Length: 100
Image (cartoon, rainbow, N blue to C red):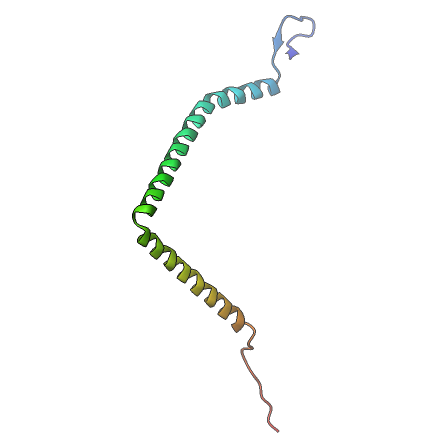
């Protein structure tokens, strides 16, 4: 802390760094309970969604098998397309043939 008047030692004023850190600490202390509350709500919601999906998976296995098959087909098809496009880049665009 800095003194306002060097001759008097009983008058102290906080430095700028102390004031700034104190204001951040109070803001952080005010926000912390809301963050913890939000974290608990999100965790509870996520576990509820996971339980619901797990229950639906056991109730409708054919639906999820169809979704998995469709995604596998789409992934395989996109891989073939990517491989074909990569191979097409190796072929020159123009082929010149000289005649005698």
